[in-house]
Image (cartoon, rainbow, N blue to C red; front, side, top):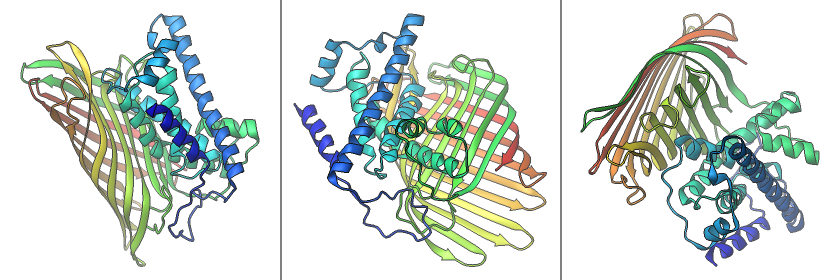
Length: 475
């Protein structure tokens, strides 16, 4: 009955068109703005968005079923009337046995699709959370035969507020730049589908990219994982790998006076591997994204620019064998206070500083219990801090240094090894030399450390060091 009442509240929410009460920056991109409309039009667009959410779930269910048919694996892909009845009447559980990438990248991606269904139907940043909640609820209740997972629901809804908004804005940016619709579709499939079916024309808020680069290269990695109390090596690797990625800075990071969420954001995605398939080879997969929820600029002079405000962060790393407990696995959804500062020196020299610090509201790690010979997903909350320093000279090149640290205290009684603390440290040093305005080569040294301390279970130590050479193209 409580679940049915919650669904009723969600449907009521569809009929309410909320608006931000903050003053808007005159130079805002306006991507958050939704035109005022009546209750009838709001309901119509809400029903269209809800239908698109359910269709997205149907596509994933069809894919899962096809996987089961062709491989014989994945009984969870066969929901039944009994599993649906159970998930609608029995309290949901805290699930700890899924793969790390499924729970923290798979649900993140699904949530972005749900969220985008709201955005393309004219709903704002906060309103679109309803569609993430609707999609996640219906997926957990109807999409699988597994017992519904409360932590999957939370991860999907919260992470979509970052991933969904970024993909929505990048889709609008691509359309404004004249990218053909079939190619823009791959940036945001939900927006592309909505455009194809309804004839919706993406609003043009102009060009807002401050920096966009794609890079490709090769690296040499050394990684090792130990269960310290029993002196057992869980994993080691030493060898070459190929990698590539993109880095996006949207909006001027140093001149922000806005109350529109994600009017300025930064997104960095990279993936590297040393085999044909990602599942059983060394993998170097990282996602770092954050955006201002609101910001202001207390410093604005000819040589100095600074912005500061509240920001929402989404960080992910898998360094080792993808989805294995021996890998450095890190996920963080955090609310931070951010400061971004730029100083112009004479002779074409620029210094940039970025600082973030705050609360990790939902974090995740993965560990192996030698005693039980099984893996666990650990969830928790904690603290984080990030600092980066960039020094660029027009002819000498660019030096980038960054460090980020996280401390997560596991939520008690969520897994058999939930009484513990996990610490992470990530550092990067990069030098780039520009041959032209658009082309550079560079080298990066990245270090990642993870330590886990648990009651009645072996402490763990994991580390990964990778030296990478790359070619970058700036758009």
